Length: 282
Image (cartoon, rainbow, N blue to C red):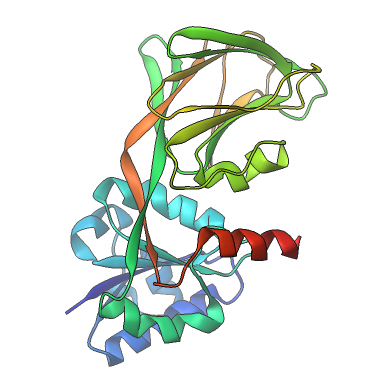
């Protein structure tokens, strides 16, 4: 019997109702739904709730209900266990999500019988701090260093594989995966990169320079960013989901993670079709 995780973003309108409908469909079709504790409570079935940290052993795959941000949040928890995920778009853009809400019940029989492929998306391991005081994060889209709300530039010294590249006076800096190339990095002027490539993009945000451009580097080369001028609200943000304040002397070290995000794709899915459709919407 298949065990299927349901990871709803309860802040999205209709997420709880859709989670309940999917759970009922799974039960009627001889599968076992497993929800987040909050999700299970929201549909009145608390006995179906499990802590997400245990899902690696409890579920065969996970249905993520929300937008790209919800899937990024789920990936941080589920990628270390290698759990496959399929996203249902309740948001706007939906570059990462596979399905729209109108498609989910047509897709469920295919998912249960294994009629899908797994697309591995590279992730980043991010180490922040100085000396022994360091925090570690996992990112699927990007790592963003930003100055905060004040109209003051910060200075960022960037090294790649131990070689100094440049010192930027800028509002910030983005280190993105190919998956993240269609997110904040694109808004900051970075290129769109096929998710099949194993590279990192380094894109300064509003650099005070006439020549600063995005740099694309091999994913296996370590990227080190030292913030040489820190304001009170200077921070590093991971996938737009987690934030850590930066202090004087802190460095941000980004490297390719061992973990990957396993995204479930139906047979006719194409990154280029999604790119064309989503960018036309905006």
